[in-house]
Image 1 (tube, rainbow, N blue to C red):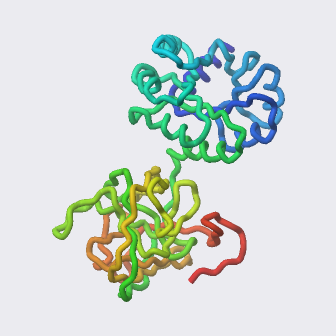
Image 2: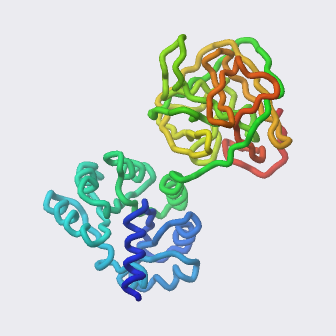
Image 3: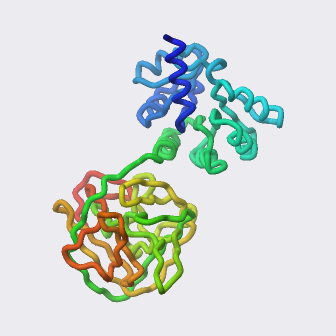
Length: 346
């Protein structure tokens, strides 16, 4: 029975992207952070498993672990040569293999990922984790974070676990449409192509966002730009990949941004550049479950929101009473972070 349970745990580790945290010595803050952020396992020295188990239910990896035994179910290997790489591939046929490269070289990871689904990459930070998870567009089977930073644990957890995040979008009934004067609007060009019904959540306030559609639709005026969202005026908030918000004008190349589709499914994209240009603007206002939602957008037929059926609709064809998709939450942000205090945004 014990062998069967271990086999089940092993297969679970193989089949899903995993987030493991290394504990080099007893550190309650790090162990607690790993537990609270949903880490799948903690790798730790012999004798420390009981302390971790006192904090909560989480798998451990150690020489004396009742879950996964280090050296038997899981092995560690540093890649310094082609021979090490070949040994890792061989071991991965029956075990999970934690690999570490001395100079953080991507090539050994690429070679291993091409051969097996049992590789865990040891990383020092979220940036290294992101690279490992994107190797050959397939990525390693998981990451082992070796860091004493609670914030790195939080960031890496969001990176690994955030792939399946889903938002509950709301229907917003259009209440007002009004042409404004000219102002600066922002096109956000990402490093990812978007499809039908996909775009970004943007709003005048942190309590309400419209789903602004990408430029992935054919039109007689300009070529498709499926990597772009003409998102709104420079002051607007855009929902970020880490749960925070950014002013559109504050985004820059290399930032992460949240892409959302009509079903609320999300993915993380990288900002390639911004295009800020002076254009005629319009104010779009609506209500959702008693909450007001508004956004200043460019006044042009190529700017689209998303209808509840997932189809894009041009802002110039909207009329009072129409419904579009968006997202609402409690207001209040300080430097992009949600805060609990009395804040009124109009």
